[in-house]
Length: 277
Image (cartoon, rainbow, N blue to C red; front, side):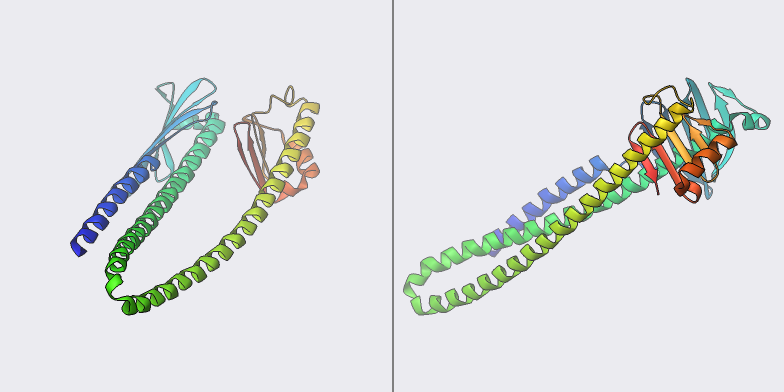
């Protein structure tokens, strides 16, 4: 009986381990390269460590042009536009594009971190699932053993009464644990509801701000209409609309009206990215 029990447990562990490996592999990207396509710019970021230095090659499309850069420890060493290498002396002419590329690199790195964190969570959850499956299988084996004992107990009623009483105690303990877990679940549900409310309020505040500043941008003829806003960045140092850095007087006007950005930053993309405080 013990051999049969061990064989069943090993089989369950093997199945769950394989499932966890497949799931983790499906949700984890290579740390060496990332790609992003948000409908406006398509990027490819490839990195490696060589002789203790981080070497990156990044390709991005902006304004119907292909940009390629090479960086060593975040310092740009080469710039290509549509396959043509640009001398370092001319890089300042492409500061906006270089800034966009660096921003894309930052986004790719953040996404790589998020992917790694998600992979760790998946691995931890797979381990928990494996442990729970083992406990469930052990419980199933115990139940089967108990059924066999009950069948034999017809000749040993007095002894079985004692065992039944012990089992009742274990059941009661399990009921207490179940009740405690139910209370924890209830508390978690309340916290989840509060967080959802906060998220909704923040989303509504962002939407009101975007509508307000879009109306101002249209009124100031910075964009044609409310559907023309593709991306926006505003902070204490600069204001960029659809990739175009605005004059200082325009920046000052908007900072004065939306003074919360005098010491903070806000970024908006028409493709679903909103960051700000």
